[in-house]
Image 1 (cartoon, rainbow, N blue to C red):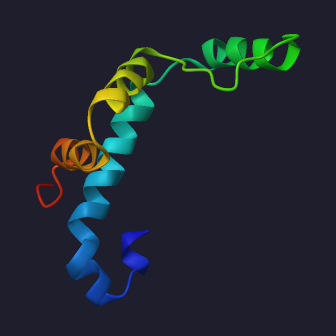
Image 2 (cartoon, rainbow, N blue to C red):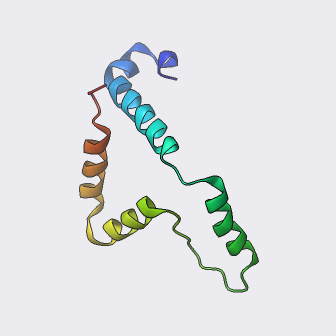
Length: 88
């Protein structure tokens, strides 16, 4: 909780913390229904040859493709821009 952070930490990270919380709330509201995820989990647990990874949902599929073609630092910058730290 940002109110429990020391004053110096709030000065340095308060805006980013607030932006991250807002983004997490948006992601939660737009998230995949638990039943949909459960289908993948069930398959992974019962398959005779399960995959090492399962990508569930459109956003995850998009991120998987982006991860293959965009360098880590550039992806970090895109995420940072999306979260818009400092603009609550």
